[in-house]
Image 1 (cartoon, helix red, strand yellow):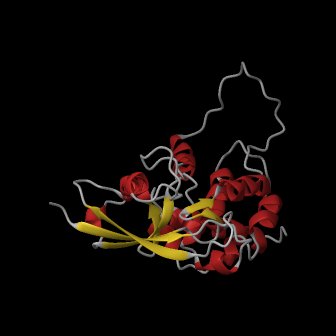
Image 2: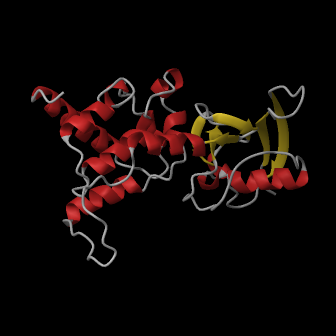
Length: 243
């Protein structure tokens, strides 16, 4: 017999008349290698068919199952119940729009982020589908790859103190994306353009350095390194008077 787990889950359906935010408790017997994602599926199948939460890949790749687990933003599919006490509290991530119960809308925010940061290679070269791919050195390619591993789960924003008080803050996800294009030699944006984009209270200088994002990132992105690089780059631009 495994442990008996008590799940205290935030419940609220904003589309349902007269529904109020509340906590409901569910009990479940622990099985070997049980994770939060599987436990929620058991609860929905056996006890609460209207329970709302998100999932896609179940492998820590899509980022859909981000939620607050005992006060920490993380992925449900990568969190084993054996690493938690017998009472497990589940809440939706803050910062994002609540869709219902544990489900939040990260997609709209990340789409707006992409448009705001113009997350594509800026170049005046005409695209030639027959041309050989541009070469770059391995060190640069690895830096781009590290930043590209972001799965847009939103955990960094849910754990960020600045994001909770400033909804316009780019957060670690936005700054990481800027860092990715800053090191890409194919992107031809100049120092002035980058400075205008990121050197604001909503950008790199809005970060107060608590680095909760680095603590909770499920992909262990090198956020400290990326933020330091952006700060050095922007400070250098300012000192050169290119503002």
